[in-house]
Length: 347
Image 1 (cartoon, one colour):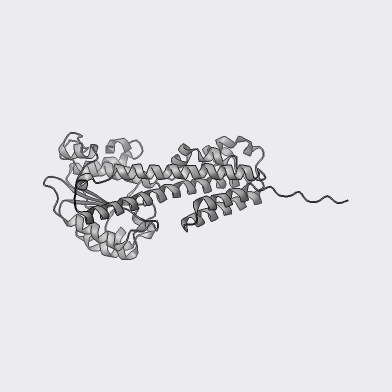
Image 2 (cartoon, rainbow, N blue to C red; image 1 turned 135 degrees about the vertical axis):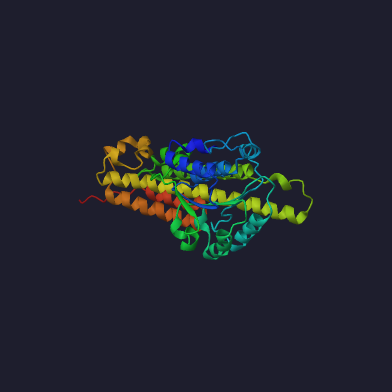
């Protein structure tokens, strides 16, 4: 994906980056700040291709024809290294950082720019950040370092001050994944008093979505898998690569699941806003409620809508704490859809 694909959304920023490339003033360390981790990674790859391009176009854009551009377009640029969370803890350990630094400092293939990308840099622990400072202060020659984050406040001031900060904030959280999986249509049936049958059916549907997410995580991990070691006969290397591959799948799955849980909470927040009298055209994500149009004429009680938000946040906390997903979803959906007994009539 070339940088030109982002010009409609960020025309001035793209122009400045291309001008820096044209004038030979590309920086060595950038901090990309945004509100969508997937979007940040796509933009980072576009800028990495532009920076690595050897076509010397008059505008500074990537030419799309030189050897580095060809490698990027085939997703096999050998000098692009990634560091990302690779465990359920969603932390980037100091050991992983030291390995990343070691790889960054290895000599690059002649004629190719060495590129290091830290995805979800907010997951760097303080020790890992401190370990990275020396490399960030004095990167090896012909090296580009890109840090991507949706929460720069978790980064040390010493890290932020050594990078050129590029804001890619769009002031709008994307819930495209949840919409594609049909989450909002399923949630529309989860109402107070709907009964245990609806609650369990909703839980089963969301559980199936999570299973799809795991398959998506496997596909994403396969797409970025380094196939240079596929033919190795070294059992130790094979075992290490397999462990890293499995950890990468799990980390990617956790990221996708967090996106779905965030969308679930946001859906209940939209309902709460309606209960407080907010008009449809003023809702941050009115599109979430398209499958529940009657909510605007007969919204739930404010206290019930507020309680549902609390339950959604509790669900997220439980799953992050590694409570069994199906049990947590069953408990959540059954509580939301529970039928309250009617008060006994007075004789």
